[in-house]
Length: 428
Image (cartoon, rainbow, N blue to C red; front, side):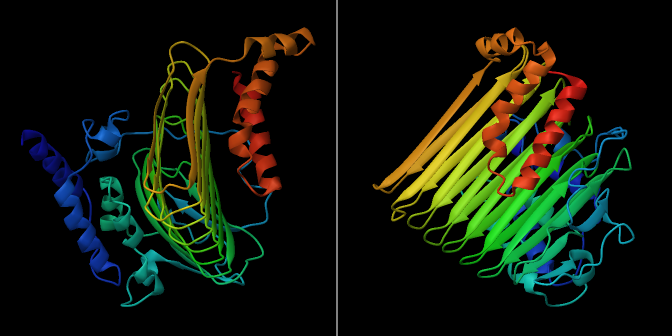
């Protein structure tokens, strides 16, 4: 009882620091989310899905201070790609730095401007997938986002845009506390590539709801960081129709705390969902991937591929579940989580799960931790490769399976080159 009271008090303290939005087409969803949030309270360290990650800095009333990171002359992530850029600075849209929103095959609006109206297509999506994703595991910080977000992008894809949409998140204020909620609807047969990069704020709470209709394709590539002191919790809620495809890859470097949640529901036959991540952490770094994939249709495929490289006491967490519902025959579910520990002080905490109610399925999961292969390192060194260069080559080889989940070869090569540059600059 005392614990429940403490969680409720923490919630009220958190809400008191916010100006809750009022009115507009999203108001009903916000009211519902707030009611659900008050019923569950904010997460605590004793909650099952938070036992490896202390959420205190994500739930306290004020955002912890985070120094601004200076990347020097390092090239911008995705800078060499022709893309439609939408820029947010500490969670506030920067129209002057952004491109014109017009692009054939796509409609782009902002939550902040359309929410003043009484009706919008996103009304049928905002908060809907987030609500579905609260069962069977409560996700209070996602409900907090739905209840309090005042901005984000609303993207309706009707064709195949000629270039990717790029969301750029800049951090300029050491105490910024940003909340963004994106809704993306990919109509039947349509296709989009969505890029995200940047630290966003001192503390960042993001929800992305993605509806992928029959035969549609959604590609998502995200680069988080590289601010050393930032904190972030992100959520992707996706629902897939028949013969649709969803692919998401996240690269994370630096940051005190990052928790990325993905809740994917395959509701149409022959759908495919791949979610992958590569994380590189040093020192005061905790990175948590929490994934829940539900197979609710026949002949669907899912892949979870997560690799983490950790040193100097860094901590990696993976919690991944595949749920196969009754009737979801011919399911193919694959899950792998691995860590490369570069010293004895770092640790990797994994909780892989399978829950299967169909009898004609192919599901597997595996989780391993280990050090750099000394035999491979000796082989490279014996052929004249310097120690740090040899270590970097082996780290890149370790991360390769996750990076291979990126469908666009050009973007995948950009990610590899960026990782190679980071490793060469800082050493492993």
